[in-house]
Image (cartoon, rainbow, N blue to C red; front, side):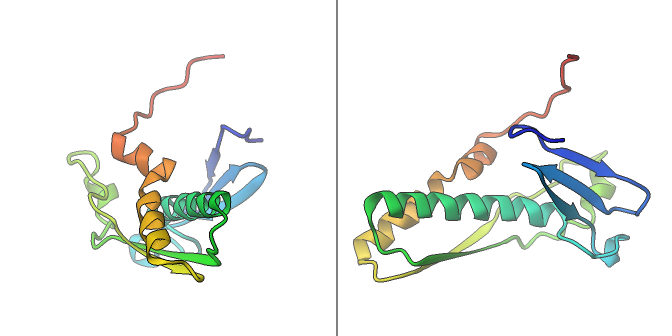
Length: 144
């Protein structure tokens, strides 16, 4: 069982289908059929974009609520032009991964121009985005 600060990932014999357990919830990741998966779930890169987008939306909601601004909804579209199918093949010999993500924000509600401009700036304050921009190390866990 995963704790609040732990995510548990399990992959079995179902090709690339992977279960992700976090906060008592289970998500599924997979690869597209073209990459040998079943195409039944988002790819790890889709989930990464989803994490950035979810954090951005939550950051904007939190800020607008604290200010009492009339933000009714936010839609965030994230995309990368890079094809990631080759990343697993090339990861042993090359540095792989996303180098740029395009973000589109759609802010709904009777916001004035100053509020819209401020929310656009606040979108860059998303902690997940900041973590990725600063770089992160994944290290072996210490024995308990």
